[in-house]
Image (cartoon, rainbow, N blue to C red):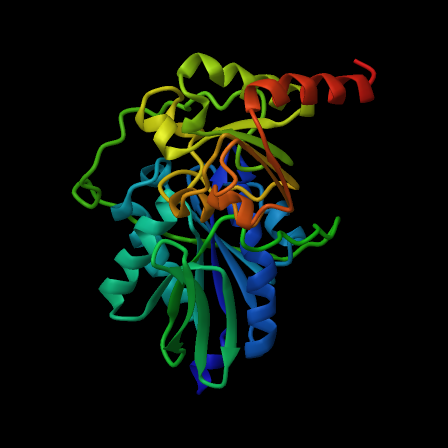
Length: 331
């Protein structure tokens, strides 16, 4: 039972010296789990030239561990797994939390498998129940939620679904201990050479962090009609999203896709224009605050989870709605 008092290790992703939003969400649930287990909350930051740990301290970490090496400048499973394993050995946590990002979903099961310990993925809730870590996660493409358990006598790895947990408010001026982790990487330790990275254009507003998201579906009929989605998003000051059917048709780029194989969004306001509401899409937006659906098909599944539904022709309704919004805003 001694291992159970060791608390939680957070794997924090940093972009340009700033903690990524999906990693900020780890701190709230991590703090609750650490307090419940009677242990501490430790954040590990992996990369190169990682110097600013202020955000991690202000978000509630009791200690920050920095794994800094030239070979860790770009994400590779080989390099980051080596750093994470050293962090686990150093901290000896009961639970290791990672964001449900592309790298987090790669890293968590890889390291858990090498250590022979449980890995809980795509978690919507996490809690302690006696000697167990209990996770709530979706199954059958989000149609059902199920609780799974893992014994916490050994480290339990878990990835958290983006948008499922609220990031805590930073405590300005809060400081904490920072320690360095010496990660030695030889020439053959990393099998993948990253020659460069390119950011996909994300439009005027970051889709995953936008407070308002307007999504267009295949019911729009053709790519040119997506101008209606752009127009309403501009009127609301929001971001543009698309369903998988739309991106598969090539009407919009993949980085705008919302859903199981795209991005998960949880805006204050979600508006679906001609979106039927297939399960593949709704699992990526169910956490939205207010859901508005406009569709000519009264049987569209999106109406079942919408707070406001309008049955009608989106080509007639959108211009009137956008004009009314602009008038209310004095534009």
